[in-house]
Length: 225
Ligand code: HEC
Image (cartoon, rainbow, N blue to C red; front, side, top):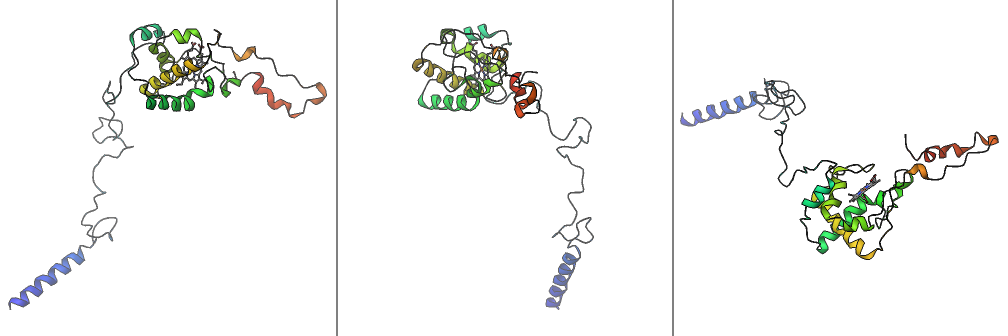
């Protein structure tokens, strides 16, 4: 009698579990113990509109003015390079590690325009305005904060690099530039040479109008629109 009860009970449990093995359980009946399909319920989806209509998507936007924990806002406008030079101090010491980091960043970001020794002869200068050397007496006399300003805000034809490199990376590049200034000789002060002053590309002779020389055309304008 007692044993029979247990068998009945066990049988009931097996039958119940068997029945509930996904049936009837929505669109995916064969998933194990899928009593209800949890996919079918109100919830946020990252790219979808917010259910309450308060946010444009399910992704929460940071509140206005929010900063990353290690982020220091750069408050100088593009014309305030001299004030940045007077007020900002390089927060890093020129340790071997910082110099190695500065070299790495310089040789990955700045070298294309400024050249391997910052002489203003990077390989992009065939197409892009040539920067002045960073070995001039002018830049040697600049404070670190003044050198920090062009990469942060851009200068003339040099775009800002503030979204590509972190502030501490620029500070380490400045230590690297200082190290180059110790080993390189002082460069003459020279304004950035616009590419238009380069000699014009020779025109092909009239008989040669279909010659492939036409592919030189972009260089003739230096890539300038
Ligand atoms: C796309 C090319 C390009 C890149 C990349 C670039 N620069 Fe420049 N840079 C220039 C040009 C061109 C100028 C001159 C701008 C002007 O005054 O018209 C310049 C000017 C400067 C100046 C001011 C020099 C002076 O005598 O006025 C500094 C400092 C400088 N760059 C630092 C850097 C650093 C550091 C990096 C890397 C983080 C960098 N630049 C990356 C093109 C570039």
